[in-house]
Length: 493
Image (cartoon, rainbow, N blue to C red; front, side, top):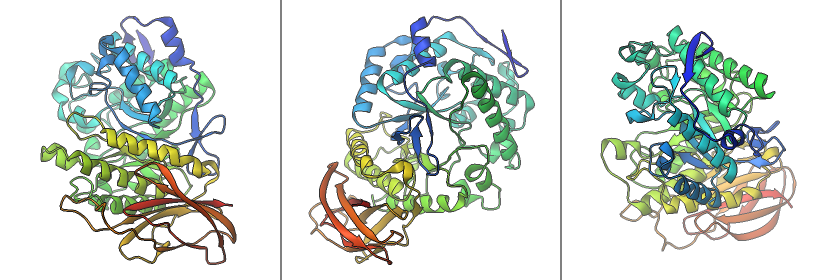
């Protein structure tokens, strides 16, 4: 037994080779940190790093070979393929409670060797292929839904009568800290760990209907993890806490914004973009992008200290979970790509983290191509020195049928132009429409000469580059002709 913060926990054996454990603890990947003075991320060596990826789970098709080492080669091939497509990050939960044989503790406080070995292997493989993990300790949705089976249930030897008190119960708090202690001591030294999502979708229902404890709960977990990492490794990984986004507009009377967007202990902010109808049950591929841009703008307005912001879950959850429908692949690919570009162009970090909501629960090849296209665009912006503000409503476009998503500072800007139509009967933008070339004015740029690079987000390629002079009113240009959308990277010539 090991005693950590008043809760004893045990690890029943170790069947992992010493070299795998060593790679997971002291891998070659540099750690990720927030860029000094900019709302983006860099490696500890100062290189720009952008989270491109999605949510995954240890029991889903592409990672299920990790369990009991049933098929490690297939998992490694998959991770290598992800890296080749520009993916840099996976968001994962230490346990995925949809099934009963993936609990990280069984019983509470005891860490099964099969699960520990699974994570040893995954960390080692991510180190090998340059991928990183946004890690959260609990799958709060399935824990709630399958509470009768969970090891923390008092009937199963745990400490809680119900998950509705998990944020309030001192015994549960000690158990949560013990889980973090185990994970930090075993994998916290790895550069494959991008960041901790200290709590997935913090919710009033986890505290008897109140959000009053959120700030204290976050502070307690944050201090515990950061203090332990600092003592062991001399530094700490970035931290955040996620929120189911619709709660912000469903419960405006509750104190939800302060802990999520401005908590002093957190390094970046994240919510889950499940806007009703346009995102969670889309009928066309444009509305989701427009609402993504709106959500990012609203979120950035809540952040007072310039910390990074990103979506860590989105997708057609109502279509898939409630309607039992998997979106047609061409439609879903375009919906995915449009949300990705609306997210990054509006000033969020990366392209957002899709929850697959497909059968099987994997992203399509078209979505992977979209991620690779975004990765190809990234070098066109100097992210570590990009002190952007959102410009979605400030950028002027001569075409009323074109939506603009933009962010910029005094020396750089990123603009994504998306036509609002025409749409085909399936809700997708028509590819046979006549190209347009609207005039665009980007405010805020200092007077000087700029180089504008136009990027085809579908093909992942430069489709034009030119220079233009900006004056006191910003930069006014004509966009290169495009059928559906185009991204513009603007930097000093």
